[in-house]
Length: 93
Image (cartoon, rainbow, N blue to C red; front, side):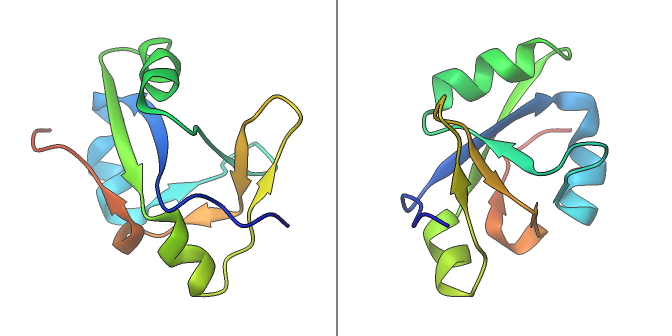
């Protein structure tokens, strides 16, 4: 486990926002939820899946609440899930 920065980012497609607002970020078929250290990288990731949306993750608050974060060799931050209360999504769909 590695203490995360206060804020991390997650890029996704706009079409997924309703489910994310309801359920948070889930690892689905992966081992972890993947987060980026900067919004530009998150936007590039989201663009691969459609119209991109960058979500802001209150990673520092999550860590203070007991969530464990890992960071991979290529700089991707990993966590088991991100509940909705730790997410900020731009207004829109």
